[in-house]
Amino acid sequence: MTGIRVTDHTSGREYEIGADIIINAAGAWSGKIADMVGVEVPIKPSPGVMVAVRGRLCNMVINRLAPSGDGDIIVPQRGLSVIGTTSWVVDDPDNLGLPKDHIQKMYDNGGKMIPLVNEAPFRAAWAAARPLIGPRKAEAQADTGRELPRTFKCFDHVDEGVEAFVTITGGKATTARGMAEATADIICEKLGLDAPCQTRDVICLPHTAYYN
Ligand SMILES: Cc1cc2nc3c(=O)[nH]c(=O)nc-3n(C[C@H](O)[C@H](O)[C@H](O)COP(=O)(O)OP(=O)(O)OC[C@H]3O[C@@H](n4cnc5c(N)ncnc54)[C@H](O)[C@@H]3O)c2cc1C
Image 1 (cartoon, rainbow, N blue to C red):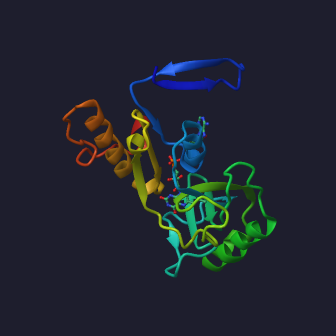
Image 2 (tube, rainbow, N blue to C red):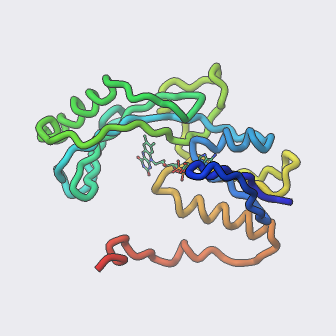
């Protein structure tokens, strides 16, 4: 059988789901998933800290026109403003911690762009890992993660002897459509389907179109 064995952590139930092909789209965890299958995915997890404050301090994204650095972007999101971000590299995308000095950097540098950042009520701070394509081992050269590319790659693991397992990883939220296209093209080829990509031409409705 081709498929996966999953554990439902709410019930503890373990079961198998069969599929013709499995797509590993586990972001910063894609290397760990590949390990389970015995194939290699060169992913370097690179966490960053973000801080959300209450209030919409700008109506469009504000980004410093400078080489990428800590706290150089403010993104309005509904009633919040999100200040991002820092960057470091880890071997394991779980248990990242939340360095306090990184939170402070968001206030210090965010406040240089919009001084009201320092007066706005705190809403949340968190760390999450980006999946950056780069060497996984600790000794491999990666300092803050800013030197690693933001590109994405679709790996067909048939070259490593695993027929029905494909990984899509790397990239950014803004490259998600292109990542889906690259993956769907490989899957279609593997399934012997000739179907042109449609998402390149179809304009998606904004999320607000789904609410009254
Ligand atoms: C600090 C930071 C800054 C960013 N900045 C930008 C930016 O400036 N511009 C931009 O466009 N994007 C940005 N992003 C977005 C980022 O690039 C995307 O989140 C990234 O492309 C990952 O998307 P993904 O869908 O591949 O993975 P994820 O969104 O991480 O999804 C992977 C999923 O796999 C699940 N998973 C993992 N292991 C298992 C398992 N064993 N079983 C079941 N499920 C599992 C996880 O729970 C998760 O839901 C940023 C992200 C971070 C963290």
